[in-house]
Image 1: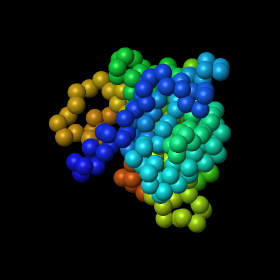
Image 2: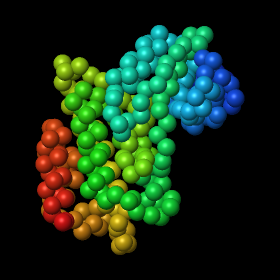
Image 3: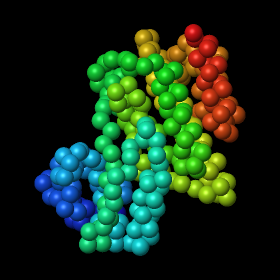
Length: 255
């Protein structure tokens, strides 16, 4: 394990600020280093447009299997066309090293809005959940599963809720029924946790020792049912259409 980490430190160093790739994209700063890639803020020097650029980790790029995986991710991203998901811009290979460029969605994530600034979202949990559900519906209809729907990956951009970071996303075929079921439930569970997060942002009481959300939050029966099914406490949802029906009931229960 120590040798593996040492190799990453030696070979997976971020590109220096100011480096220009593909005669077009100037690196401004490294935004982060994930398990499979390095993420940068870059500028298109031809248009002065800021983008997000992802580089496959050099240690991963040495393995044929990982090269194939990275190209599959590019193919998946190219297939997505939805206004609340970053657009795919470009991809290229330099000296055997693969890169791709995505639209930069500017704004702040839900976690920053609710806690760092100690403020509430301009939109209510109702609006946020519907927006997120529509995005998930679009993806699932195409057998694409995000697998990382978390508050840091949910950005508010000019009042729109956007879902970013498809690093763990996967597109399956209709025949892969078992994995579809697992990944679908993972996304539904993440929806439940996000809803719970939004509801807790309005919680004014004291945290009870060993208390659960069922004890701490005052919720209608409809909201409780929705959460239990999303989180797999009760019988799990099989399709987003059923979530939409229960979400409508939950909203009606508090209006």
